[in-house]
Length: 343
Image (tube, rainbow, N blue to C red):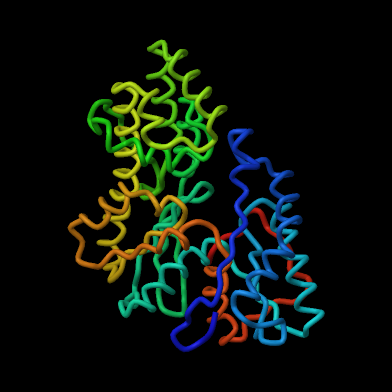
């Protein structure tokens, strides 16, 4: 990245989906090993695409948490080595803050900068949070999931029904083919903070729906499809998914989106938000994008492009820019933290 308009010079992502798909989810030890294997060639490719060497860098930014400790340690160790070897400032970035800055980076580049105070809905496989964001930037946590994150609920439901991992994109592709009101799910009512989320009850309701029906044959048909074709098309999935299950998927997705946006709408009014930012891997969901843009809000809704919605290094660099300007640097005692609050 460069200053001024803050444009991205390169963005290289090493996907681990094929590695973890056979296990139905992320295996922490394998994730660490894949990070270790990929980090050197990924950094080399990023520098080549940007047309610069280490001498052209102004700092090294690295995610210190939250996340899987093993994977975080690979990045931290490599970043510290780069910082030391090339005498570059080291900047620690919170992963969630990176997702927020992915939206702000692209909003600025399109000439529609984010106005403050803003409400940030960060929703992914590991996180579902609502933050008030003010200039500085300053963050105030307003709500969070008490159990499964929204993306995690998508993946677990998809795995239960034989759609494999990651399941969120598959459900999103199939949901438009089903009746979103076919299955009635109860919305979560939270004691304490009403702005918190919970998706475990919804996941259990899907399980109960499947237990009341004999889906053994159709689930096995989908698993057989995955064994023969690791990347089925929507048409392939539709051939082995009856209308009742499509209705379940559509109803599940509609309920998750309603849970997310119902609380986001309340929060936006409470803080008089001038912008709503939706980021994280689930921000790629087409149903969520359409529903959020249809909200009767008094502020614009900002989404990152799909490439900056899922985890990437550009968003970490975007969050680090301001820290570098403010002199918020780290030393080599920086540690990985699986649970790192954003404050």
